[in-house]
Length: 227
Ligand SMILES: *Cc1c(COP(=O)(O)O)cnc(C)c1O
Image 1 (cartoon, helix red, strand yellow):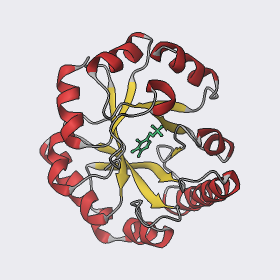
Image 2 (cartoon, rainbow, N blue to C red):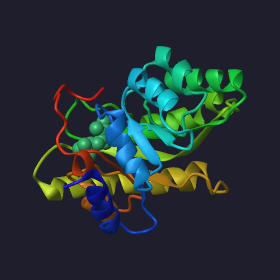
Image 3 (cartoon, rainbow, N blue to C red):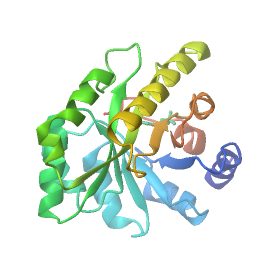
């Protein structure tokens, strides 16, 4: 099936209040343009060194999401244009984003990534770490980052019950953090959870942003783990 058809089928399978981010890592410009011509504008990449040249070459009205692990030394390349960074997993990284935001005179929208999976290989903070970040004086002084919500990845497993449990936990953390730290801030509202294999579970548990690659473009050729 064509990319445009897969995109349409995916859009038909998610409710209107859920934002689809098409994850285009390892895909060619031509593949991305096929989704673009079918109307898609939000795309996600997992490596700064792949995201930056794509953003330069592809249409300017694409909203680029950084969904993968981000190293501090790569922040400066994406801050001038990135639409949302999903993967803030340390205060130190947020400090660098704030510093680069200041240089660019741009408030950078970000999500905090929480670790909900069983695997130790997935990045992210636990709930307490996220709270201490948000309570820190350093965070409160940051003028060039805007924390818009949370992101998390469930365990890679066929056990849908486990996936749902993990997403439930993330939704719970999202609700508590919003209540505790963002009671008067309507911009804290994004819960990014769900990928090709588990987005239906994500949506059922309260996700309003899903990150989907394989279901639209087909299997990725090179199976090195996403960074
Ligand atoms: C690759 C990736 C996705 C998309 O995964 P698919 O299984 O291809 O849908 C989503 N989120 C992150 C963080 C990724 O690295």
